[in-house]
Length: 253
Image 1 (cartoon, rainbow, N blue to C red):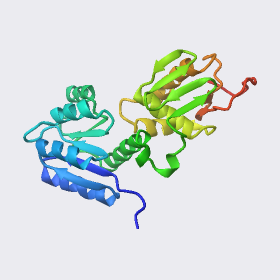
Image 2: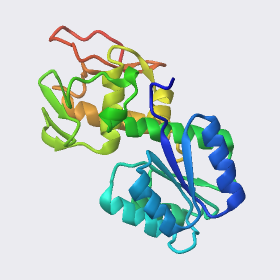
Image 3: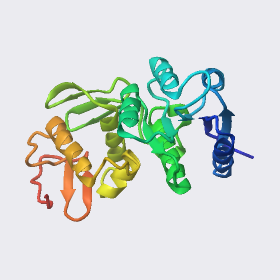
Image 4: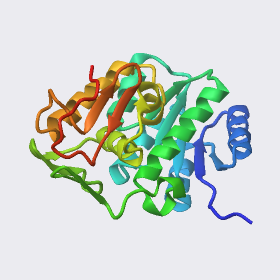
């Protein structure tokens, strides 16, 4: 007997052999997949079926994929959307990002890479959907978190910290929740990249370092001598929310 509802994935794709192959492989992974062969049906299924993730082609009958993406984003900013298209030039990718797509994969694609991206996007959605969050990720009491005089509101994305009142980005929220869920545990840059970005081609381990610089400016009393977001040489980073005013002797880079 199932104890958890299957994740719903809507595939809006008019090439039958591709749509059927995607649907089959998603089903084999334990997801519930539904196929829409044109833009109008895709929008109707999104409204009525309420999927957890949308796989979207660009070149579709009736309504093109970019118009679908734009329509959905006007009403729902959080549902993850993955564009899967033969049009892989930079201009199309930039347009998709401008309209709010979460990920973009060009055809032909590697099946294992595709499934990993699907898993990452669904995990990302779980951070913002308490009712569908997996048991092991239920680490927050309510929608707020406080440490060292800093306060974070995960619903409004607002934080009150040494830098004043700020608005956090969605990516900053994702990474903060990863650190909080693993407080006291060393997290490698590769792990943070995999969980936060899914090893997208335009990200490097330096991307993680840049976010840590931001967090230190936001939350540390002295960003040059951090006590909450600590570097571990050749490992990555540790989040220590329980720090007191003891001297910091840990190795930093």
